[in-house]
Amino acid sequence: MNIEKLAKHLKEFTLDEIDMIAECDCKTELEQLLNEGKILFKQGLYKYIEKSQIVDFGIFISADNKQELRFEEAVHIFIEDYAKKHCRKRTYETYESIFKVNIIPFFRKYSLNNINQELVIDFYKKCKSRQLGTRRLKNTMTLLNQLIKYFQNLGVIDKSCNFQVRRLTDKNKFSINRIIFEE
Image (cartoon, rainbow, N blue to C red):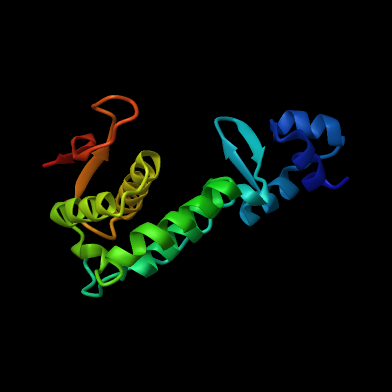
């Protein structure tokens, strides 16, 4: 009997359960599947790992390295490694559009490491002067924050540029007061 197909069908099982169903000693085949990373043993249960659940590792420039990550490269990494894997197609297409039209033209000349709160405030003022709609402005600022937080959590950049985009005024009004900078 093909133990891998059985494990895939059961999803989670104990050694006794699979032995009983397969009507044979499955220890050696289970050990082989464990070594290949196709199943996981945790808290007394074997669990089949779907290929989509297998974690891929990316290579990122560390903050200790003297190389600086260009803003456009950072956007590309964010879209490929985060948005396309964790968001619906329509969402990452919207992200690409916001980056292309609103964010990249302003930050193109900067490296990701050089973005600070003053630069974010200047960007906000530039967006306001372009008369972006309230919703688009909020989404643009939120996406910029999400990009910065993503690379901060990876350890690529330091956590000196911290801000939140929240509603502090009327629901339909968006102003600089909705961006909160953290020390």
